Image (cartoon, rainbow, N blue to C red):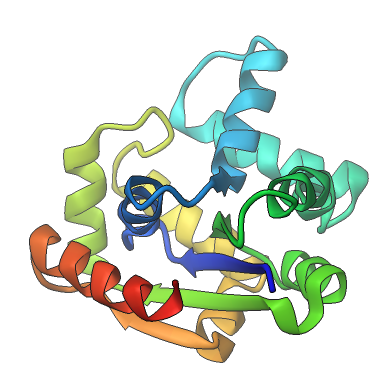
Length: 182
């Protein structure tokens, strides 16, 4: 039976590192953040931190809170035809969760990554992504994603993983957990 996992967590919590472990194991990953980055490029907007959040908010306002999830389900369904497990990187809202749960039912599971705020900020400053920005951008991004229901998703996740240690420990923790799934 094929399954879909969706990983959520506050910005800088380690969702991308989590997804990288899955990719290394040959499991297909689809990123909701990549969808926003693609939309920014499609609109030929200036690549500055504020633009990514604005585009994500605009899409949700124009097409509904579940727009990214609705757009993603077809691609995931296609992957499920040839893969027993697919990971969605970057679940951020309760509306998105509702789409995934109604689409895949018991074959869907959410995974939350919890990382202390100070550690998340430090990691984001070190990774240097266009959308990260400084302290004000970090705080605004946290608040925006909380407004989409991210805190509820983390609290209600099927699996909760702590990520306050070093990267190698986190990766090993994910590999061990993943081995129980496949």
